Length: 352
Image 1 (cartoon, helix red, strand yellow):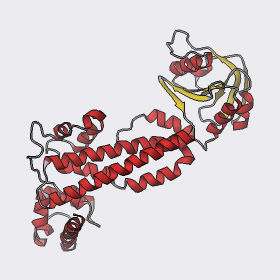
Image 2 (image 1 turned 120 degrees about the vertical axis):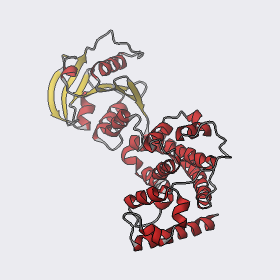
Image 3 (image 1 turned 135 degrees about the vertical axis):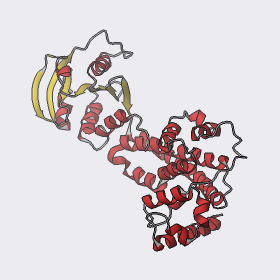
Image 4 (image 1 turned 180 degrees about the vertical axis):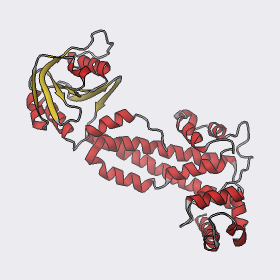
């Protein structure tokens, strides 16, 4: 599984995405150019900072927030975003908390968020921007058209990357069936798979920020990346050294800095191959990835086959009787595996 980066930010973007009631209220205040300071949360820590104003405790509505923002003070909304608790209040955070913000409203928002860990939104009427603070995190909400343009640009990049990955995988398929795969072929495929997945992560963030306006992007993303992550994991499982956990390898590859990802040796080292010539080192596939492409073969059966035969080439050369001896494989499954591998090999040759 992918490492969840910026999880807190994504959760914030979800509750403020276009189409949500909260975003509608924020947009109303922004368009009115009145500015505003809104705290999301009703913990004891937050309420201790509230001074003056008045308690209203009414149901949240976008129009109500718009009207209340016409007053200078802050608005406190309940943690579940269903009630407006206070309006026109003054927030008095610890003045010793460092902040790089300059305006009074934004300095207060930054300090309150750092002190309480809550989400605080500062809306600038003069600059027409919505700034979200959460702890030490600061994020400026962008206009949907800007995010949509970037998402479409990222999709174009993903499409190009996917074409390259597809070509590399088809070449590797051929090399695997011929038992001629080099470490260079394998590491290149893993590198390209990771590059694709990083673009996917970026697009998922845009989709999160777009809310209901990101449905089309979501559909295009799913169409472009069917089984890409699973293919990458199985690639690692096929080729990493026996004494290394493939899940740990996958995590380490995700943590490689972007510049370093371009260096194939860095990936080879994580797989367990140090100080070797990538082009001259030939390695055999265990067969997890190719066997997973055969319909109606359970994962547990694939595990048993790989455990028994060790390499894809041995599985391909095995007779029906030899396959039948593997736990979980009867005569019917043995024939399915043999015919499945034969069809895959024919398809690989056609693709070539």
